[in-house]
Image (cartoon, rainbow, N blue to C red; front, top):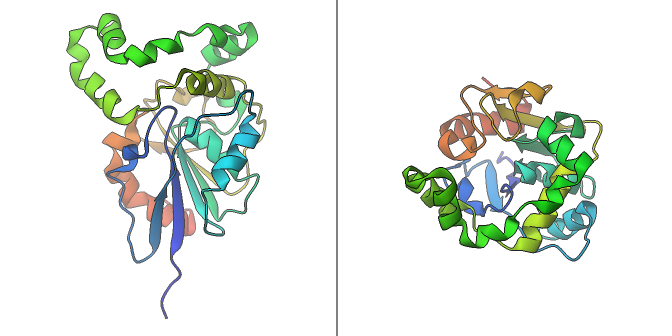
Length: 224
């Protein structure tokens, strides 16, 4: 008897395009991969309403949702509007209590409103000025994967992360996190599957781990 194909939808991180998943390969006899993309938010759109909009791009019933970083927050919000088989959150957080202190401070002081997100439009020169010419290779990496540079989107996205109010992890959610994540430090993360030496971009540079483990995580929650 043939087995049903499981639809898996992937949501990239903040400002990133779906090419961050270019090295992810799931067995085609069991899974079908779908790539979601960011759209520009409406003025003062709530994260919940935005999640509803992205849900319209999910055509299959009872899918698996996989989200990276801010995309991990978004797929959790999406799962509040549609029935899912499973939600897998990578390099992200499950509750507001896992946010680092600097983000909690930014929320308390509303400092996030003053971040110079307009500089992203001239990102290459800004990065070279800030980090030096030795970061050319890293800048090329950012140019490839971070293509959503609309200031309204960035302002909105930063606020949604900093001001996220989820207090309890959602059921049927798997959290995968690297112990070297500098954006969401591992010390604040509670219950997760740990990827040793995994950084915030481990979906790109540790793709072999995901290719080996995602199938069984989707199917039975166990990881080697």
